[in-house]
Length: 184
Image (cartoon, rainbow, N blue to C red; front, side):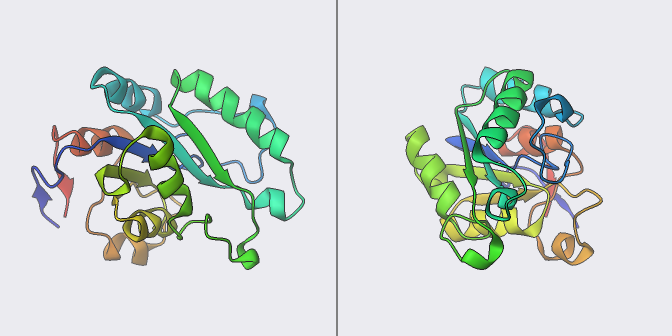
């Protein structure tokens, strides 16, 4: 893959996946004390804040639909992550189990469309940064641009299929701001 400078036009907002992208993925985490930021997460959010770019989080939380945790627990975990990150504009999550086929669960576009609406921007002016194929597929379904930041949970086929990938979160944010190249 070749790096492509300027692959992104300026964005109006950046939306992040939560688990595996901003924070260490702890399956069905309902304990705020277990929230740990991933390397570069705070700096990436700060860079966007300094650039005046609104931010948000869009996250599947199927543990609610599966009965493994409550919406209140997810809200407490999100609040802790938000404090550690220095504050993001909007936090949305899908509480449904995968078999419920709701319109908000990634890879469907519902969370992205709603986050964009709440931030006052059009979905196609958003970048979505995540660690698995469902994140970038949701971006595409909403008309947004997706950037995959692979980790151990990312399937090799997902990396091969993606147009834009970045080795880490800070590189992804610099790319959507037009300050760094992303693989294309």
